[in-house]
Amino acid sequence: MELRCERDVLVEALATAGRATASRGGSLPVLGGVRAQLEGDRLFLTGTDLDLTIADAITVAGLEDGVAVLPGRLTVDIVRALEPGAVHLNTSGEEAKIASGRSQFSVRLLPADDFPRLADAATEEVTLDAAGLADALRQVVRAASHDDARPILTGVLMAAEGDGLRLVATDSYRLALRDLRGASVLSEGQSVLVPSRALGELTRLLSGADTVTLRLGQRDATFEIGDTRLTTRLIEGEFPNYRQLISGSQANQLTIGREPLLDAIRRVRLLARESTPVRLSLRSDGVELSAVMQDVGQAQEDLDAKYEGAELVIAFNPEYLADGIEALAGDEVSFEIIDALKRVVLRSPESEDYLYLLMPVRVS
Amino acid sequence: MRLVVATCSVTYTGRLSATLPEADRLLVVKADGTILIHADSGSKALNWMSPPCRLVEGPSGWTATGAKGERLDIAITAVHSDVTTALGGEPGLVKTHSEAEIQGLLAGACDCIEEGLRLVRREHVTPIGPVDLLCLDGRGRAVAVEVKRVGDIDGVEQLTRYLRYLEQDTTLRDVRGIYVAGTVKPQARTLARDRGIAWVEVDFDVLAQRRTPELTLFEG
Image (cartoon, each protein chain N blue to C red):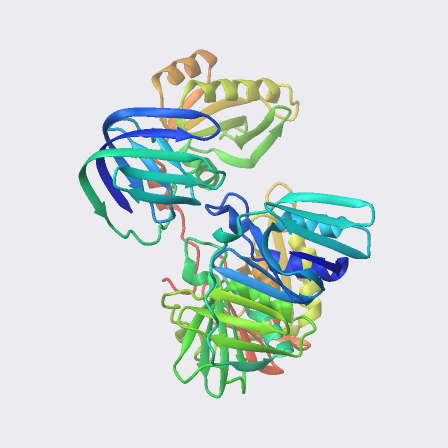
C-alpha cells in the first residue's frame, strides 16, 4: 500500500478511528491497531476494541492499493508530529514507512490477518438531526454510570415514546431523561440500551454535522455521520423501571436563577472537596448554600429564589447537582422536592423535554 | 473452555527453548485462544501461550504458533479426558475490604478503635508518607492509627517510623500509636507491645454493616 495525504487530513482520520482501539494490555494486540485499506484514492481506516468500532474514509493520492494494520497510537503521534504538508505512507512486508519533508519513520505493522472481521450494519436506516441528537446526548450521557460492575447502568436507554425517541441514563444516584419529539427511530414499545462510552464518542463526531443516520441491528447500532461510521454493540439486560420516579407532583417547589445558582455552587464547592455535600437551606425568602469541611473551613452564600413549601435543609453531591443544572436549558431551574431524603426533580420551566432526578445525601 | 487430560510431552521454541518430558497433564484451551499446560500440583502453569495464537490439531498432537512465531509442540500419546464447556462472560474478581475501604469505614467510626476517639484527618502527611488516620483521644492527645487488612510486623515498623516524625511536630501533644487490623499476628503484637503501641482487631464485616447506606433512586 502506498499513498500521499495532507498531514492534517490523515491525522484527523487516524485519530478518529484510533479512538475505538483497545488500550494496551488487551488479549489481542491487533486491537491496538488501525486497519488501513487503500482502494484507488479512498483510504478506509478502522479501529475497534470489539465493543466499539469507528471507521473513517478520506480521499488521498493513492499510489498502490493494499491493506495494513498500523500501530494506532504510535502512528497518530508520528503523523501529528510531522511538519505541515504532504505525508508519504508506504507499507511493505511487516513494516510501514512514514515520511514528510526530511523526517522518516519506519514502524512495525500488526498482522492484518488477525484483525477481526466486522459485521455489516443493518440495512434499515433512520435519519436524525445531528445537532438535536448531540444536544440530547450532552444532557443525558452525563448521568450514566462508569462502574463496569453494573453494566446496565453504563448504558443509555433509547426507547420509543409517543411519536419520538426518549433517552434515559442513570447511575442510581441521578437520572437524566430527554424526549426528542418527532424522532421516530424505534417502533412502538421497542427500546435498546447503548453503551454511554459509544454515545460520548458519537457526540464528538456529531459536532458540525447536519444529519446522522442510525441503523439498528439485533446486537449492535451503527451511526453514520458523513464518511464516518460508529458501530457499538448493544447492552443486553433490563433497564431499571424509571417511570415510577417521574410521576406525580411534589409538595415543595423552588424556582431559582440557573446561572446565579451554578456560580454559587462553583464557589461553595471549593469547601466541598472529596465527598462533602453542599447543603441548601430553603426558606420562603431565598436559599442559603453552605459547605463545611472539617478542619479546613466553611463556605456560605445566600441566593434570591422563589420557594413554596416547608422550610427544610437538603444536601447534594455538588458535582451531581452542578451536572444537572448545567444540562438544563433556560434562565431558571425548578426543584420539585418531597423531603430531605427523597429524590428531587430538576427541570426547566421553559421546556418539558428534559428532566434530571437527583438523590439527596444524608447529613447530620 | 476445553479441558483435556492427556499423556503428553511438550517442546517450546521461541525466545528460549524448553521441554517437558512425557507425563500426564491437564491441557486448557480458553475461549480467547489462551493455552495452558498444568501439572497436578502448583497454581502456575508449566507452560502456556497467550493469544493471538493459531492451534492446529494433528494425529500425533497439537501445535500452537504465537504472534511472533514462537511454537508450542504438544505430542500426545493418550487422551484420558476431553471436555468442552461454554462458560460465558466473566464478571471479574470483586475484592471486599481493601485497605482504602477499611480506612474509610474506620474514619467514620473511630469509636470502634477506642472509645472517645475522634478523627482529625485521614492521610495525615509526614515527611516519610501519610499516616492512615490522625485522631484525638478523650483527653485531647494525638493518636496515629495505622490500618492493615492483616497486621504483621511490617505495619508496626511503619507506624513506629511515623510516630518518630510525629513526635517532632510541636502542634501535636504526646502522640501515641494504635495498630488496627482484621487480625494482628502474634509477632506484631509482641513488637507493638515492646514499642508501646496499642493494637486493636476490628471485624470489618461488622463495621461495614454499621455504615449508613447511601440514598439511591432504585433501592429503599
